[in-house]
Image 1 (spheres, rainbow, N blue to C red):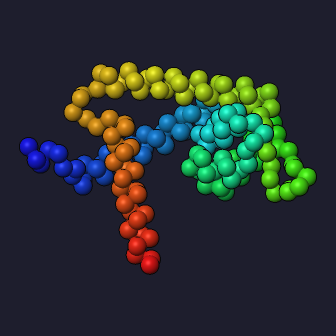
Image 2: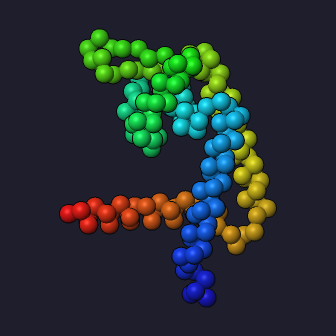
Image 3: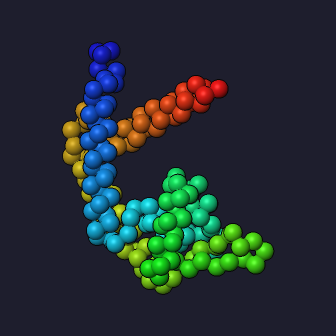
Length: 158
């Protein structure tokens, strides 16, 4: 019985790789459906939640996206007419961001795609084999491994 509670290395690695492949496929499907990346949707959604109050640094920090990826994403969204930057006269490095009307519409469409995917996942989890790992459990496990790995790396540097 004790053996069944232990996470086996091969099983964890296999599950991780399968999840990674499925997430990559999902991100590709999302981009085909909406015309923007998942990271760009995260940027749009954050701006919609707090228009005019965000900077690229705050978006990066709150969404867990690198600042470079946020800057690229914001630049692409501005070029495509979905986001408007405004410069404050006191500090030109700060660019509060807001969505254009087409950006608001795109965010709504993307949110519907995510909502439909979440509903499908809920249906799938309800009928799935109860002995398999569910998404939350796997996510928590991977976060624990990542946190432990960061702590070990920092300790080794010191």
